[in-house]
Length: 194
Ligand code: 5GP
Image 1: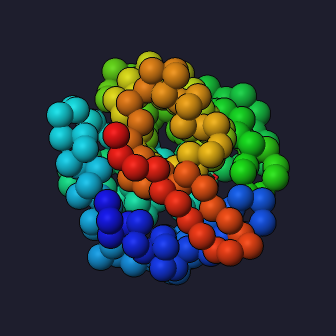
Image 2: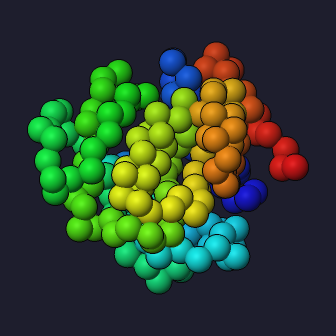
């Protein structure tokens, strides 16, 4: 995953509050050729797993999920964020605390786009405290589907999400794990692969 680490080193900007901005290739401007490499790498890592559908959360996960889905040849469904929604027979819902916006969103997925018994690959851009993933996992479980794997582009390994999700027994593959980052000197250190 050197191409990803090199890109983060080159273009990542460390903001106060342990936020890493990668707006110039992943979160605002999107380098689609770069996303192809990400999609291919997720396919390589989950080549042994039967995947029926990819699920993500708006907005930053959508582009990554769509390109990845080309390699699995499956549909994508994304959880939408709303302020509030009444309990509804047509929707699965979960509460998710936003890491970057300091608010809590209800996320929703239409029941018709998440059939029971499917194998779901969850994809997202970042993993911090794991709230987004726990919301997505909850929705997959409500649907009676199976979380077959979780693919994250950038895990911040100094926050708790990775440990929580792995301890729950899920197969979590993070393409780059940031071990530490320092907003004063701009230095980013990555966890060595096992
Ligand atoms: P968590 O729910 O794991 O605390 O945070 C993950 C979600 O928050 C991701 O969907 C991602 O959009 C956002 N996020 C968390 N940390 C960062 C970060 O350092 N940079 C960016 N750009 N997004 C982040």
